[in-house]
Length: 66
Image (cartoon, rainbow, N blue to C red; front, side):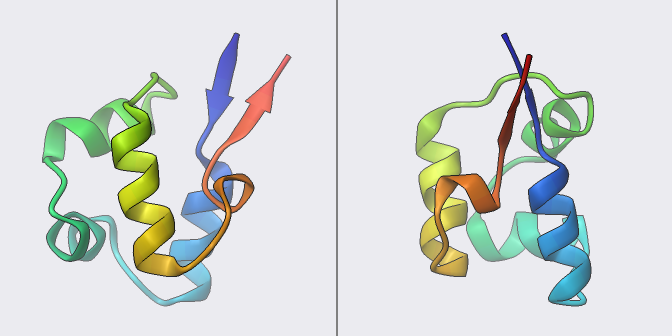
């Protein structure tokens, strides 16, 4: 299984927000952003924080790649 964070990157572009601003706003580490940039898995707690911040669904942050 693999996941893509492309929906999140698109959301950041739409919101005119940088990854650094996301880190600061959601209180996540640079290593987590780096993992996401490499398409690695992150905890659902982080996904929940991002979804709560943007008031969006999980599908607006990650997608499953077969």
